Length: 258
Image (cartoon, rainbow, N blue to C red; front, side):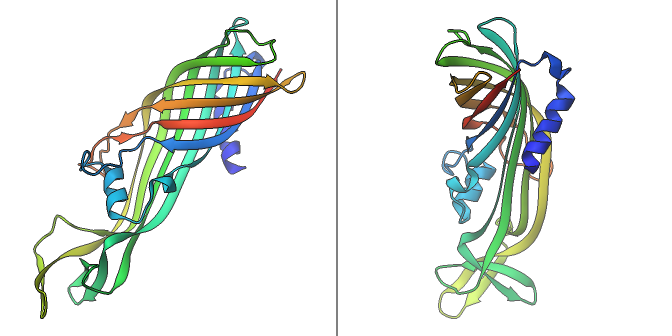
């Protein structure tokens, strides 16, 4: 309910007048972000590193997306659509190959295969809110039993990335543990991070779907929409590749005609 309230408020600010809107759409669906997950191809990708080192699964950062849109009909086949969508995921995970041991000098990451210790964990969060305007084409018009449509447009995406908890400083390889059995073992210091970065990025999208009338002023809709866009990580995550803000959204909902 909170998400839908925020989306509604955003549209009220952006729409010049609700009197000009011919339909209101409410949508809910599933979003599959287009992040890079192959550490071999993208060694400097924040997503690839997190998925490679941590217990996170790609599916952990897929999930529900909510949306609202206003549609203004210019002709029987062409309309202008203002839409707002929202997606957010925050997950808690642990390093796969290292455990934590504590000494007077601080906490250190030891190889999991040789030592028993506490888990080294942090949370990772990602959120996108695309605000877009697009052109929608309904080739058969809007007075048929099945109303197919397609379109595309552009806009801005409000995004944020967040990492809070323990991180291993692999850049500091100056620490060696003298093990009585294994000999010298490379270990790494553990830091506590509270990093967050957010910004607004120009993005664009393409979509296709269909509507099916279920009443005089209501249609059921099903849609596939692909979001495109990348953003530079500048402050808290400086040094990583651009983060991909795109992905595929598969949604369903209802159109209310005015």
